[in-house]
Image (cartoon, rainbow, N blue to C red; front, side, top):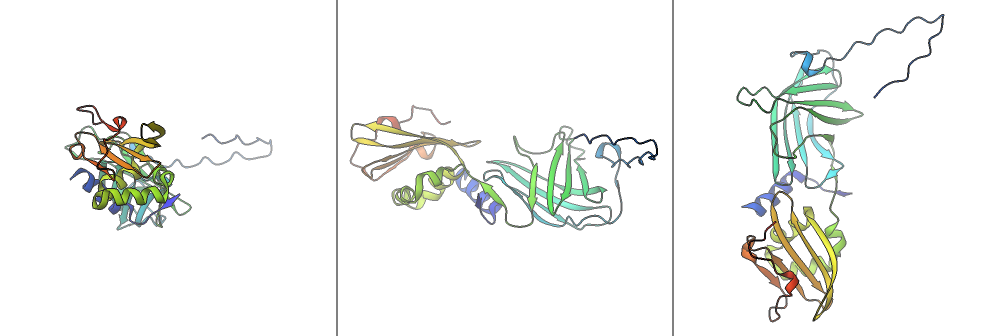
Length: 273
């Protein structure tokens, strides 16, 4: 797992730069009294706020989704907790797609709460957010439709500490020597043009043979953004980074400017996804 602090600011910066149960039945004994019926916990569809009052768990703080993919971070800020509920705001991502919501959430038990999107101008996003405190972690779930972008969700486990993310493994697979070579070839444009896409995008690796030698070839894109590019590391140290025509006008970075670009690095006209 890669751990990083401030994932939302870093992720935002990268995007801006890149774009401009059932329980077992009890055994019944003749002498046993029937167990008391449990009091059902109200659910959002059955109650109006306040749904429950009492001494609830402490939900306050800045919560970060953890154990998820690095391109899909989410942060929830909770404050002003009372015996009936709390105020919250959430910002979640699926690559470049975003989702934001906020308002007053209401308790349904000592460790659960809900928020219903009641925007009178939104007759489509009529869903609920469900908050559950479990062993010091915040669990989020959703019902219905919410005012988020495509594939954006708050679902998952959140921590008050440093979140942990898994990555696509591309940077790790290339290794420090190839990354250093890319940084030298691309220069000041590396982080925006190459580093950030490589860290979150979808890339395939292959070994290729060319008239001037063999090497490692990778091709990929960033979901929701396009941003297709091809990179070739020839075994003799030559490097090419080629972008699709609609990305940086098809710009090419290389440390072999006197050589023709290998044919397999070229894009067809109009190809950009």
